[in-house]
Length: 66
Image 1 (spheres, rainbow, N blue to C red):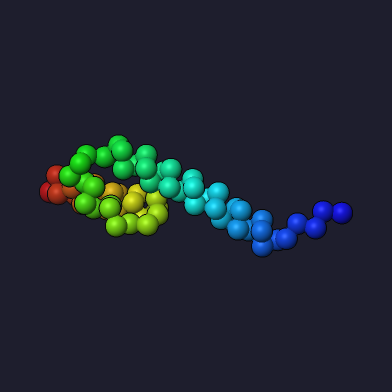
Image 2: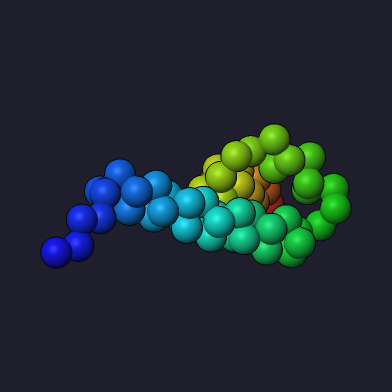
């Protein structure tokens, strides 16, 4: 019988997700203009980066419409 510790599995899953999140953050940072880095440099997750860029571009689009 396999006696895998459930906490070990949770920690392993968390670490895998954390690594994937770091990769997404890297890809996002490599694909934006240099002047935009200041908007995301202190954020800690790819979700925060995405939301920040979305807000920035959405506000720009609203300004253009007006």
